[in-house]
Length: 110
Length: 114
Image (cartoon, rainbow over the protein chains, first blue to last red):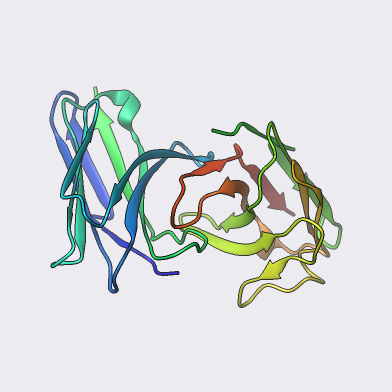
């Protein structure tokens, strides 16, 4: 298993703005997953992007993956107060348990 | 998808006692995992719970401290034994969640040891 490193550690934006958070990792991957955690609750899966994909959308979420730079980004457009949460990436290789970094704490101010 | 019921949602326990956390899944799943999240930190994998065999523990976690049961494909328990204040954390179970599949999480157990 390998661990992703999210950046920035914390992000504060106004409602309606876009939020971008990044994930870097060190070795080859099969896919990369993004999760959201609200207030120390269970994580919720957002998007899985495979190593042969460069971009994926889901509603207001846009994820990119650059395997040459070993990095991914998560963009949340038109953010809402309800998007306030911690966001984690999980780069994966093979059929192994997910490993999480420290996450990005996003605060969306109404 | 899978829906997980995790109990208790929170507890305050005395030093030296034990707490058993339960996870019930609404479908049969092969892989179940237990994580710990210390205050302000990320999730750390404690162990993989295998049905019909002993759990596989990660480095730094031992069976005597964190015994796990997995009696069938829908249920698992994690016990935090002989607790100390350092065990105060959120404990989370998850299912599936390997490199090929998304993970589903319980709502977590917020444990405070006093």
